[in-house]
Image 1 (cartoon, rainbow, N blue to C red):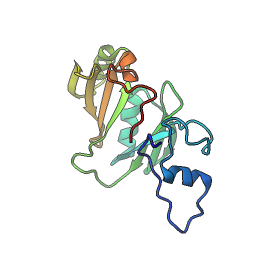
Image 2: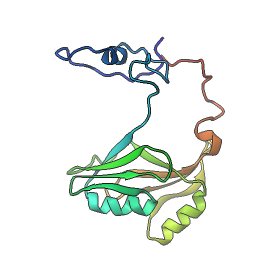
Image 3: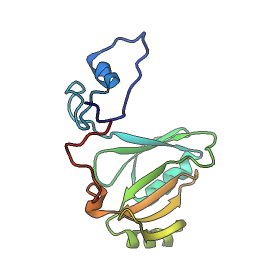
Length: 171
């Protein structure tokens, strides 16, 4: 039963290990990949493009991330205040006008956080507002133009009223 659209396309010249077979066969249960990959899939990091990595470092440190790797001018990596996933930047020459992705950072006291950031010079193009999906969101752009959303969702982050039942799969 396939429950996740994640797929890895292994070129035919590569050895088809049990892990690549499990990935390519689409045999996921949404949380475990047949035990072949070693347990639960966990988010390690998200990397986004940055035209000026140094300016972006200042921006993300200002949001409260902690810089752990500084490999200028091409790369930087941060730890978040909570959790063990990391966030990184890699240098690019330019971005598409609209990338289509949004980076979300959860803030327990969104209104206060936005006020503090505004006082520090951050410019929001969307002030905090309640959305129809039950999240409260404020949006701004980083120095490269990537959209960053600060939000608070409480229990609705993972458990919205329309969440699929645990046993239901997605084909």
